[in-house]
Structure formats: C-alpha cells, structure tokens
Image (cartoon, rainbow, N blue to C red; front, side, top):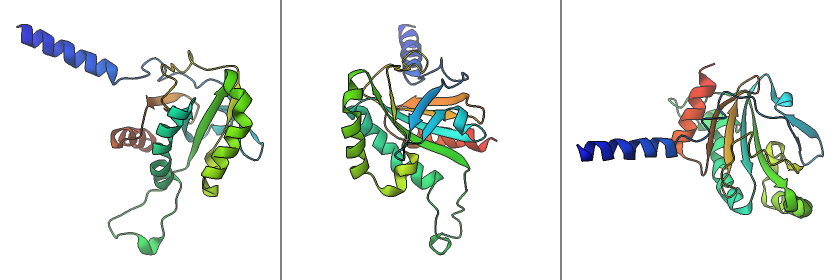
Length: 188
C-alpha cells in the first residue's frame, strides 16, 4: 500500500513539474510594445491579431542560449520555403500563415546595455531572421502576468488569433513541445 501511495505521489509531483503556466493558458497576452531592427514599433498582441502568433522570450544570456535552440526548428517549420525539386514525394510541406517572433527582453539594469546587446545579436544573426526579432525595453517585467518563474530560461507562447494564450512552455526546444504547438495551430 505504501508503494502505491508513493507512486501516486511521485506521478503527481512529476505531472505538476511538467505542467508549466497552467495559470496563463486561456488568458489574454498582456499588452507589450516591442521594436524591430528598423525601429518599427510592434504592439503585442494587438498588431498580431488575425493570425496565430508564436513568441519566444528571453531575459538573460543563459535564457538566450536556450532560446536559440528554438530558432532553426521554428524557422524551418513555419517560415522557410522548401524547393519543390528537393521535396520527397511523401513530404508534404504544409504552409502556415502565422506570426513568429523571438523577443530578447531588456528590463531593469539590463536596459543600460540594450544598445550594445542588440548590435551583438545583429552581428551574430543571419539577416533572414531580422524580421522575426523584436526587442522589449522597459521597467515592466511581466513576471506576474506571464508567470515567469525563472530568469535563466526562455519562455515560449502560442497565441490564438485574438491574442489569447493557448499554450505556454519554457526551456530548450524539444519535439514534444513542437507537436503540441502544431496540434494547436492545425486544429483551426
């Protein structure tokens, strides 16, 4: 009997540990003004309504490292166009009409180094990705609204066409997270 209770307890703890952001799913994404490299202001989620939106957000250098694990798989799945002559007969490339943004966030004292950090990111980033980078600078950390629990991991959100959070996760990219994102986007 003790083994059964212990097993149930371990399974319950594991489920809770891997069920991040239960409190934010179903809520509207909070208003956030960002800027791209061209200096254009983008208001999230208002300027992205009408399409599903994928947002990867990072607050620190450590988080940025893990955020980079998302870039290639997300770009390849949702943005890159495959050449028809290179496609396998059985490889049907579905086209997605979504918004995709990676958002380094500069809050508090980090705002003082934002200009240098943006330039460093720019030199290390392929020009094809510039349109998918937005920068947030401000005092507001969004910790409560988005349930940010750790500063050293990236957070990833799927917003529906109205700006409501349909899915939230954190950490490095993995296939299970991608499958969940695809399930949400493809259900509509």
